[in-house]
Structures are given as C-alpha cells and as structure tokens.
Length: 352
Image (cartoon, rainbow, N blue to C red; front, side):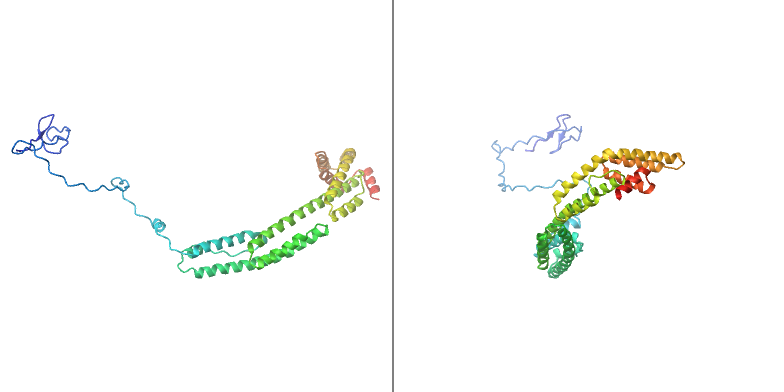
C-alpha cells in the first residue's frame, strides 16, 4: 500500500516530504506528522525495525564561535609564536639575574663616590639568558664584577682621604670622631675582600653622621659670626653694644672650639636679645638724624634719592624682625655716603 502524501492545510495541494513552504501557495506549513506504520498481511501494524545500540556519549569539548561570514581568520604573529614556544632550559639564567641585580645595586650605591661602573647591555643580558652555551657570558659577568670592585675600592680610598680631612676639622672643635675613623677602615677592608654591599652600607652611614656633625658645627659658627657682626655694626652706627665685639668674639670662639655647642647657642641668643633691645631704643634716633642729614644735603642741591631709599630699606628690615640685615644696609650706606657729623664723631670716639 502506497504511503499517503501530506497536503497543504491552506490550499489542499499535495506536499512533498520535509518541506516548510507550500510550492503552490507559498505559505509556511508545519512539518508533516509521522506516517502511520504499515500494516502486515493480517491487519496488525508491523513492528519498527530495531535500531542499532547508541554509542556511549562523550563530553563535547568547548568550541570557539565561528567568525562571521567573509571574515578572514588572522594567522598567529611571530611574537605570539615565540611566546607560545617553550623557552630553552638555561640553568645560568637565574644566576645571571641575581648577579646582574647585585651589580645594579653597586652602581646605585657608588654614585655618591663619583665612580662609574660598567654594565652589561640589555641585548647582551637577553642573549646570555637564552644562550645554549652560557659559559662565555658567565665569564663576561665575572669580568664586570672584577672591574666594578676595583673601581669601588679606588673610590673608597679617595673618600677616605676626604673624610679624614673633614674629621680633622671636627676634632679641632672637640667633636669626637673615633667611631667614624674605625668605620672608615671597616669600609675599606670590606671592599677589598669583596663584600661590596657591606662596604657601601657602612660608607653611607659614616657619610650621614659626619655631614650631621658638620651641619651642627657650621650652624654654630654662622650664629657666632652673625652676632659679632651685629655688635660691630651697632658700634659703627654709634649705638652702644651690650658687650665689646672683640671680647665677645674671643669668648664665643673659645666655647666653640671646646665643643660646648649648647652653652654657646644659649649665650648667643642672650647677646642678640640684649642687642635688639638696645637697637629699639637707639636706632630710631639714628635713622631720624640720618634722614635730616640727607634732607640738608638735598637742600644744597645734592641728589640723595638713592640714599633715602636705602635708609628706608634698612629701617624696614630692622622693624620687620631682621636686625642683622637692617644694620648691614645702614652701615653700608654710612660707608659709601658718610654720616651725620655728630654720629661720625661718636663712632670714631667709640672705636678709639
């Protein structure tokens, strides 16, 4: 018996198997229902043929989505191929990195010494890491280390001479430097025996301590010179200083060379306070008299605009809390332009 054909539900035209659109009316149709099973000779439906046993299911591996139509898949680049390719095994690579990092630390630590150390170029580092025969590169690195050590030792020997001269100056002002002298010898010994890291560490410590001691000494010296200059300027302008500048300088210098920095600074502060208090009482009178002196000169046809400006600047510096700068300007004005006769006579008498 022939199988019945499916028909279109819209126009009734017969439909071939497995079509989705009617060829007659061009209307979408559903898939045809499964055909009924054929009947046997006795009128019973025949059993469907036995299907072969299904193969054991395997898990599907994830698959990348297909590119859009018309898109060309780019070929892997050479750089990607190099990254994907396994790097050759080089037991020297780790040792090379360690030794190059050590040389880099030497270069950084030796900069204050003014020493230029050799370095392996970047291309040579890369070639050494990937070389199948690392022994020549290992010898090159050892040569760089030997040259660097020799230069560092020479740099430390020069540093030793400079630092010992600095320590001699500190010791002239009773600053103890025995520990620093011992550490200098330790630094040189460590550098000569190859312990460059320890030598650089000790060198930095000694340099910091010596610089700190020098800064304290220089600050005390500067304060001493400023207060003595203040007293001398007062004397030159006819304002009596609290103490004689020459005697003060001798006493303060003795304290400084004895290493008594704390008492010295206290004495300097006391002298400066006394001097400022005397200037507050005597300097306005000097400024007024000098201003009258300039006005008198101007009345006689002498140009005094620059001198009047400098007089005003000196007074302003003093009243703004900078007495040393104010008196320096006023004394310079007196030396270049002269001063009132009365003041000049008083200054000469004070110097005598």
